[in-house]
Image (cartoon, rainbow, N blue to C red; front, top):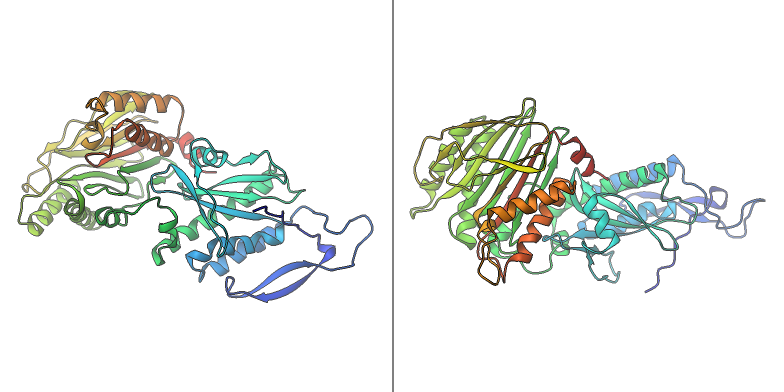
Length: 449
């Protein structure tokens, strides 16, 4: 289907009308052409640069109508908001496995084929969180769709003839509109299934459905910290989980691996998450949080269930990391792009086996250090020759991606795909990664459009 480019009419050729729209839920100001009217020096339909008032009106429309719009109406709301500017937009959301961008259509609009994140201009804009101009006529701009620093997808934006896609003002205004839409996507995802359905390429298991809805966003950034995490197999994951909370100058980060597979493992991980969060919110310290998880698992499950975990507290001002390791593979410290140490101290038995005392270890991070947390499903994955992926290969890939200057979210996405591509057939166990970076100001910039 050929899309006719939208036309933005100059103010001298327009009048204001009000229209009641079920999408807008309020009176909306539109500009429409006044037929038969022309002024000297300007042809009918000539495009002029959008003013500050026009951009603000589009943002105001999104804010006002966004309070009541359903998730299924987000694409229509966005296009109605920017249409007076002569702009049209196609919304793409990244699928759960972060391999393709899938269209979020307007009602009645034809669904387009997914765009591969590797090998497409839109995918590159997503990967590098950078606006990119398509070499087509009329001109189109690919704008990353980012909530905070969580990559959600991209916008394929069609611009009117005289709107310069390289203009700093145009890009700043489009980035603001994209950011607001991203907030709406996150806000609306819990009130229906449209957005979840749009991001899936296959059905999700009961265990995975339970777990994903409990986890925090996969990426979080402040001026001193970047956290990024990923789980595989994303549609059937059961026992792996991650968690974090950042308050004032302290970041608390954890990774979990519950015994077993599927729904039983997901339920065990859920109890561990709930108990640790409850204790953390009460202001308890690492050792007390560990005991709270022990008590919850022992109290809920009569059979022998346990969770391996690494739980940490990072002082964002000093870089001092306090941690304990409950039977989990030790995280890797990456400094200047090279693995230099393992966090192999602070050992105790897995959570839920006993109310053991956790020895709290300490480590002083240096600016731009990275900590790579992983579960054993990552290192124990096997290829067609039955050879394990292994820790050495994981470190090698992590060092390569670090040397390429990739931001943590993209590093994690590529590491996850390295594993999936290596594995012969479906993964035999859950495989999770979490990357923590301290004082990576350059990476913080690379997580924003």
